[in-house]
View 1 (cartoon, rainbow, N blue to C red):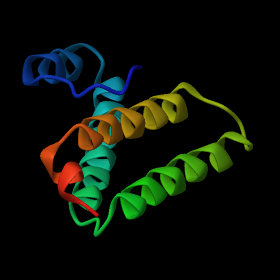
View 2 (cartoon, rainbow, N blue to C red):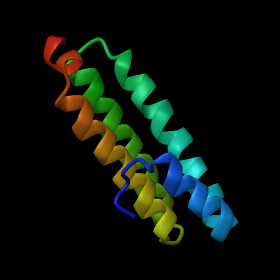
View 3 (cartoon, helix red, strand yellow):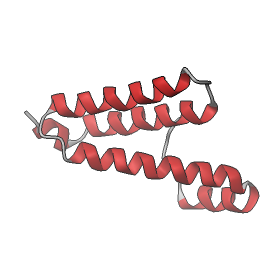
View 4 (tube, rainbow, N blue to C red):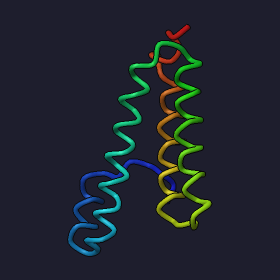
Length: 95
């Protein structure tokens, strides 16, 4: 729920005991990885922050059509990935 990356053993547990939750975790993991990749290609801090706002607004727009735990997990994953990126040397080197 907090958007943190799951370890391999945690993913294996989900696969064995809750296949639908495992599928949801895989989907979130792929979305987070795509977001992290996009952040790595940011040309400035403003670009990175804009993309963060864009992704969160996109998720918020979907909440209007009915809230769900999955959307909350997606938002948390984006926030967590952004927080990690902002603390990185890559972000510090951006203009």
